[in-house]
Image 1 (cartoon, rainbow, N blue to C red):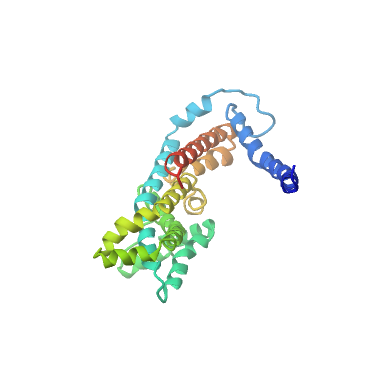
Image 2: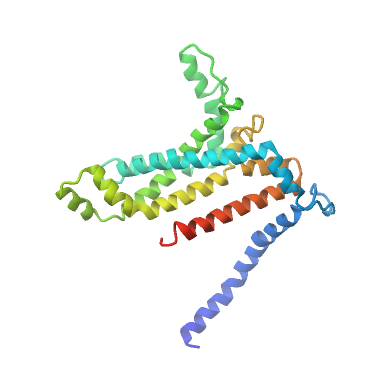
Length: 290
């Protein structure tokens, strides 16, 4: 072996074992244990002995709250793709120009993403408060009684969607701005000299060149929507009447809080399979050339 190869081998042998050890202890083993526990009716105390096979998985899909959680995850994905990302792209186009003041606006729109999810949820819980919150003050100006939006099963999830859009809008906007800054400005100038309108430049030049960034943004949006948890817990904890449950809050409520470890492990296995199938399928089909 050459000196360079020996040096590279030494570095690999020095750094790889600790990384493999940490990955095995904190990722691989917990995943394997969760898969094993999902076949037992276990409360978390003692050793799991009551083997139930696939009953936890069958019970899972028969539970109305879990079907509601799946529907809410799909709703978050749809709203993210059809509302959040287009708004982020539009704002990125407006703020990508090097004009005085754009940096301040970028910071303003990016600040919610920096804010911790729990803190953001507590802030919006106060905003939605029907007695003392901002919503109560606005309705009070018109002499009306404010609704308790987080206590209404029909509207609570839509109130959470507003928070999700507000919270993660800035991340996708900055992602698009970074992509727009990689596009050669000379292409736009040449198109304008040929008589192209701003819409034609955006549709025929900007969008095609921005396609890899858009695909990456969609990937993050869908994966984040599937794993949505931190924002919901301080707002509703999955209530009222399980109307705002997502798969992760459902796992926490029924698997951790109620100590149904076997049932909760089945939820974790289903969630893991959905994330893995989506991640690898998406990268294999839509991001294989990126």
